Image (spheres, one colour):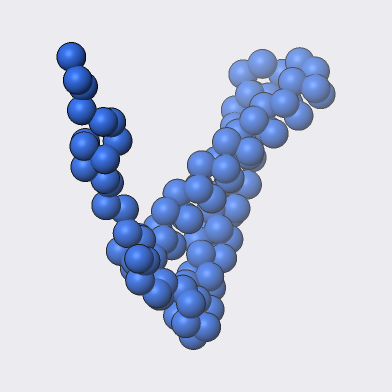
Length: 103
């Protein structure tokens, strides 16, 4: 049986989600800065190659950073609120998975 999650408490959940949104805002600012620096360096060393190249690079950097950071933020949210401890993850014994061999 699973225990009650700390995120079931509205006050605790509001604090946790506010912290997650704050982390995501910082991540968004870091992503915008990183994309701007990358675009500047690419333009400085290569000139104007193609607008599609710059769009692809900007989208690739942005989506990679935001997806990775968002998932990592959810890991921090889950661990920081005690949500991980409320899950019963006891695996059944080996004998419960397979019946004994009668060879």
